[in-house]
Length: 400
Image (cartoon, rainbow, N blue to C red; front, side, top):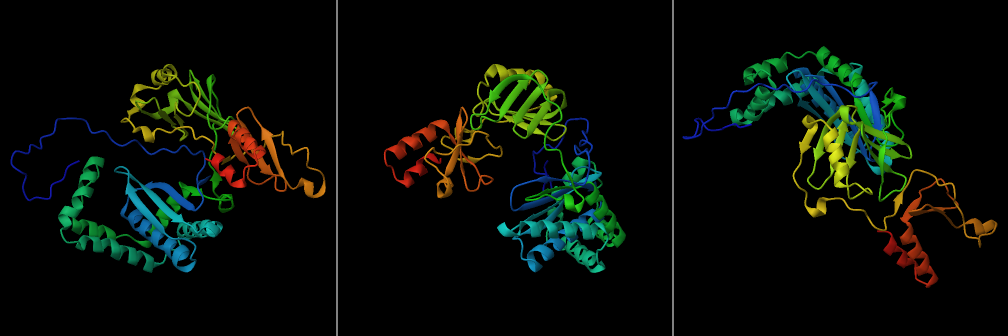
């Protein structure tokens, strides 16, 4: 994409392009069986995304939504640092509407509640005329920018690429002035109905959002490659697809349903299925992923889905973390305490559970709390250090 801000084409610059066929953007589809839906995300972040019809009303709706979130959650509630919404065209007919809010550590539930309340209010059509007028004024003001012609060139180029008509500043102002309140109400309903909400904490089922699928319904068989950092996770490379087997359920990407696969010269592959599930095959993080196994994946994934990527710097290639302490979600069944622990206060100690590659540790007084897991060799070294009368601070060496 090229745009020029000069009043003439520089001498010697040939802008003649070869003949070709316009390739439209793929039609919008959804991998979600039911919408609106929600997924669990990282603490402190609430994100809403939906695909809506491309329109001037949707542009103004994004501004109204962003202002509503900022006022409710930042100015009045004091729950968050930032709140905003964005409208981005994806093709000539549709656009992506995205809203985001962060939260203070102890305010996550309040932020989710306020976020959903703001969306629900706009969806129900409770938008004030003053909100629309304010958004309209801000949008029109953009056309008073000095050097407007140069500022509009990127959007003009994008419209040409997407096959959307180019409107003059006067036409754009007229379209903004013509948007009625009812059109914003319709965008609010459309955004809610197709939306996907990412929330921390307890979820959003209470607000009418359905939990999006967390795991695949089908599995594949093939060679098994245990994760080097977690002996409860296994990567399976089969003839029909790849699968990540976890304690909570499988994640599968079938080759015939692979939307794209990034290809790294170091052997890493990242496969994304049409259902939205993604699996990254990193030879440095799983046992026994040889060039032959990577070649089998390459041969099975349709060539049109291959996306070549440049080489990575050595420090960008993930490596197994030695001596790592991490939390696990499963509960080992072979927990045991020291034989020196008796009744009463003797029960106030730690418990351990062994597996072939790791040793898990938890507080006997709070067995439902977090569980720290160390590589077996690190725990053995820790015990030897204790026998040698090492101080407690020596334990930090094994935390990684």
